Length: 266
Image 1 (cartoon, rainbow, N blue to C red):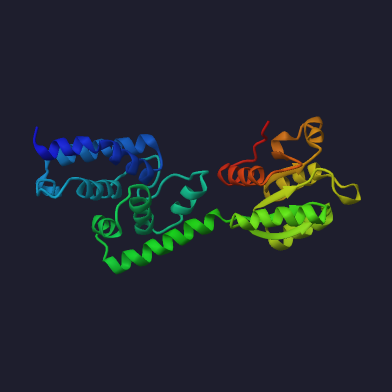
Image 2 (cartoon, rainbow, N blue to C red):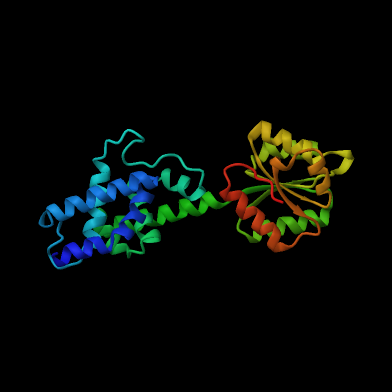
């Protein structure tokens, strides 16, 4: 076996990782790698594998080339299938060169000049595109959080925790009416709810309404988690019991970001 052939087979696991991210599914990614390896071994000089410069960058370029030519029926070539993962969703919204730059640098650990070479981009353009891609991904992780808590001190504490995580507190409410007004005016993406609210209001009923109106993700922060179990409402959101810890709130928010639907935790 020739030296470059050994190198090709040695980096197949790396190629699979990139191809799976590129395609959006394991099956499509692995099929793409198989085609890539076959093409590389059959015609190494065509793809620059016999120049003694290493096979990794040429193989990334070949994966991109084959992906662009793909006519698979399970999704349009050049874009992955929709994903519930927020980073993958954010990347899917990017122009294709920006998405691949991000994957090659963040996932594969290539330097910017190396990634630009793989994608045949001028270095200055690659710098601008990667900067835009990183900003877009960061923005996708930021949540607009509504805090529904009738204890002003606890509401302030929760707001500070949310802000310390880099998210935006779009407002606080002490009862259902205030919360619904905030929902309409501020368009939150996540709500922290107490179960028992001022004026006899119910955080559980509010959560049901938020789900109906906007399918808003919710986290119950409450000392009355028994109410949630009794009313069969655990599916409406995670539960953080009072007295809460900073770590507990932060973990719940992080889980909420990566969960496509609200999930109740034991």
